[in-house]
Image (cartoon, rainbow, N blue to C red; front, side):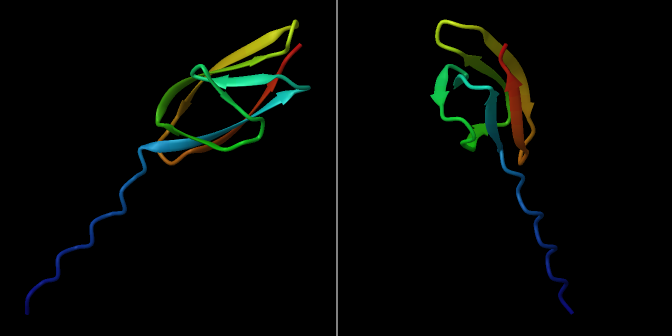
Length: 79
């Protein structure tokens, strides 16, 4: 009998997804690109800079590192 080749494992995606919720509100940028609150954004795996700014008010920032296939919901308080 001829052995069947083993099935290749499913490839791990080279991207992850990030959703940002500013509290109480603010304009969001990820790596300098504007995004809507609570919107899932697909990004390459690796580090990303998230900034939330309130017009004429405070801002907050975080650096997050997405793993391949990761889905991360991030809440950022702005005070």
